[in-house]
Length: 285
Ligand code: GLN
Image 1 (tube, rainbow, N blue to C red):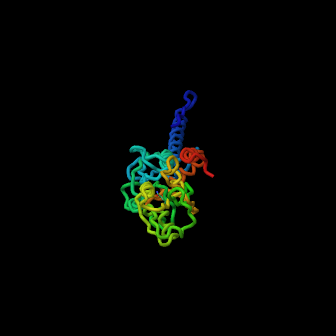
Image 2: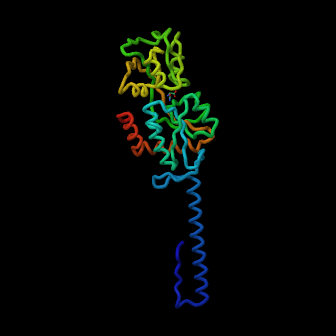
Image 3: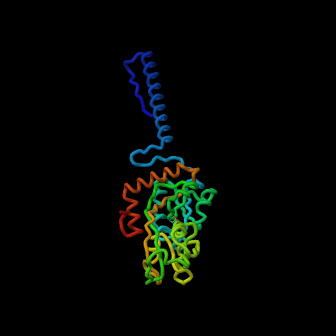
C-alpha cells in the first residue's frame, strides 16, 4: 500500500480535510487497481518473464503427476532396482518441475495403459514410448511428439534376411498391443505371431529359440543388444516413421496443453537436448 504524507502547518482546517479525503481516495484506487491486475494474471495463465504462471491443474493427487509406464523398454523406461529411469522418466520429471508437480512412475503392462488411463483414478499421464496413432487418438489425447522412431526385425546372429516372405511358417515374437505387432500383422504372411507382455520377454524367447524373430521399436532393440547381444542381431530396420507422444485423458485438455508448453520450453532452453544426449549418446537431428 502506498503511504501518503499530508503536509501540516500552513493548511487551513477545511483544506486539511479535503487533502485527507483525496489521500484516502488515492489509496483505495491504487489498492483496487492492484487487486484487479492480480486477478487477471491468475486466470489467464500468461507467461511472465519466461516463467510459467501457476495454472490450477487437475491431477489425481494434488501436487503430483502420476505416470503409467511399461517400464521394460530401455532406454525410454526401465527399472533400476525399484526406481524407474530412462529418457521418458527424465523428460517427464523435467516437465513436472516446470509444472510444479512431483512425478511418480508406476509400472503397467503396455496393452492396459490406454484403458486404465481412460478408466481414471490410477495415473494422469502415459509415458511409455507410445506411438501417436489415429486409433489411439480416438481413445486418448496425445501431447506434441517428443521422439521419432522406427521398427526393427531381430533374429539369431548370422541370419541372412532377405524380406518378409522369409518369415512364412516362422514364429514371430511381438509385444501385445504395439505398433510392432501391427506391422507384423500387416506385412508378414503365413507366420504365427507370439504375443509377449513386454519387449524384454520377447527377446528372452528369441534367445531361448522359442521364437524365430522379434519385431520391436528400433531404439529399444539397439539398446537391448548394445552391451551383450546374447547371440541376436538387428537384421532389418523398418522405416515406419513413428512419433512418440505422452498420453493424457480426453477429460484433461489443460494438462495436455501445460505439458506441451513445458516441452516447448525444455526444447528451447536446451534441457531436452541434454536429456537426449544422456540416453542416446548423441544430439537429436
Ligand atoms: N512404440 C510402440 C507402440 O506404441 C511400442 C511401445 C512400447 O512397447 N512401450 O506401440
